Length: 237
Length: 237
Picture 1: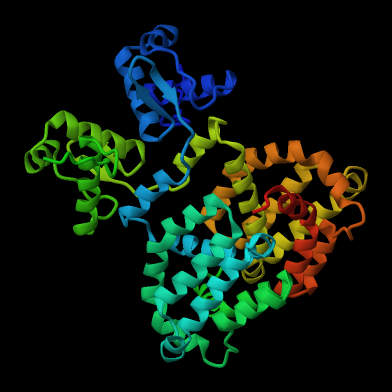
Picture 2: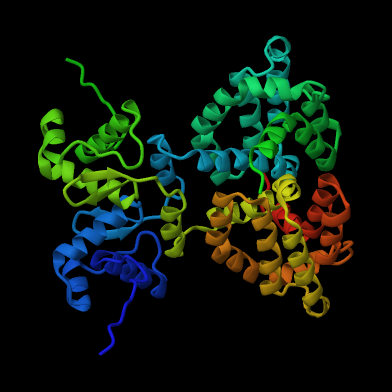
């Protein structure tokens, strides 16, 4: 008899399978946050597995923030928090250089891409605050092209204007990444910047007040051009 | 004696604290993927806690994909996977409408924001593929403004051109969200679109071949304008 060689399609354990079943159960029954999951014992019986295995699958879902245990009610579904678990991965500082670059590029994409939202949702108070930040930081700005704190305050205000809560949390989470890229890019950026027309924070405020989404977008693109140049020279296909 | 009322700053358990300690340990010792963590017993002794509590913290880190257990080597650090855990949260379909909207806006931001990367990294083969997709889908396109499959194939190719691996996985993960938003927006978008100058996929290919990042970006903005209009009218501050 011929020997059949096969490779496992997925490295999937019993607990993985139970976890998948529970997620399927949630989808099929269209369960919502606040709803209770079946009891550990019931699940173990239905699936024909041990309670220990069910308990471990539940513990995973709790770690992922999808359920919480409540006294007398058992396991209750929770609104999943998309950002929380990425946070922990970033905290370890174990991301490789490629992923850090990817995330830094996210920043550039967001700041160009969110312009229409900034325009549509900005409040007069936010614009005034942005102008104040740009004016107060201005002197420091001339001496020292990148003052990270000023940069941060200014761009954070723009993210707030875009008024997308998930984006705002994403940006806060990515700050350590920006700091990292900032640190190793600082010298190079100063060099790359020579010969460019520099668009300042004050110029951006002016565009936000009197320009259009289109003119603001192109001004932001110019403002960020040292970063874009850095990124282009980095990875060649 | 006056009674002091206080609120706990954080709802933090013993296992939470152990988890934090381990993450701090990874950062302080600059541990990398492949490095081993201290043994369960050692950690329990250092922290003055039970092995059961350490085991639970380790199990969480395993769930988050930060460690894996290997025979004879104990707990080994793993390159964290940023996307994997968000995937499970999205799979449950328990996200509320605001978060879904936030994520849909991510798509719009990325497609506008990634244009410079698309231009800098596109290959002739990818441009040819994009043109083929636009031509083949063209007839269907006239009859039925949104054919989701064509839309998906075309825009996926653009994401590939941007050549940011994290973004590509993010986009794949968000597809069910786009499908959802697509389903409930379809009718409204058709109405909103009346009177707009429609920028087709073929127009976009033309810009990619003979235009500039700036002209392509504005063409993409026009192409997506039904979505942008929908979003603007949705949330008012």
